[in-house]
Length: 289
Image 1 (cartoon, rainbow, N blue to C red):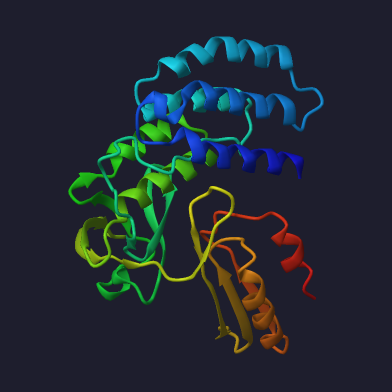
Image 2 (tube, rainbow, N blue to C red):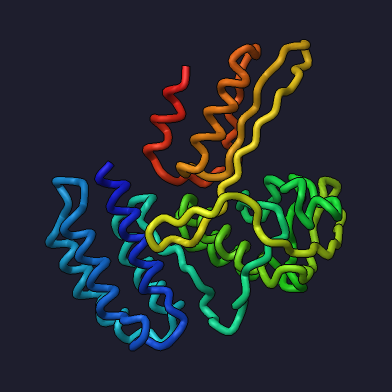
């Protein structure tokens, strides 16, 4: 629990300060670097944590952080520092792109989620009420370009430099930032289907559906919970419950679905594409009998 708390605190701090899209004097490079370094030193969960080595990391990287000319350069220094811990949940997840002139209005989204599989950006789910569903976007399609820009241009550097878990988060953030934009405007996408053929679609962005939830200074998340009763190939009945992120807003809908499906032959909790969330939710949901 301490480990998760420290990680969450780091992420909140980094999002609040390190990602400001202006000069070093505005995003406070020295103060931010010092705050992150100090949180790790004072709150690290492992009693054997090597503080002397962490002091050496500070001496080496702090000058580079102060000399960083752009938010992107500054983030690289922070990533280097946190990467030396060798832990999966310590990372910089920017709230803004490195180029602050891009993607200012992110209120609209195309209505599908993606994940990094190898070096490919794959559609993992589609909101049935979205602009993507309206033009026939399906799970399994590979996104190859967004508004004419090849996806590989931002995916390859991530896949080459980040550990798998961090690469997933960075690739998702980079893709979502590019897919989003003003509501009612279209994003032009090129997909590759299962046969290798290119499929071009213009997807109209719409406001995101779901219950808005904000945790600390992390970006607002929109929580969606769905449930349905399915018939199995053998004629049985299975309740299927799915939600997109582990947040407290899931609890009420989950409880209602569990009660509704108690007479079914089985219940499936579909976590595909779920990136995680509040760890304590696991105990509450797993406690249903």
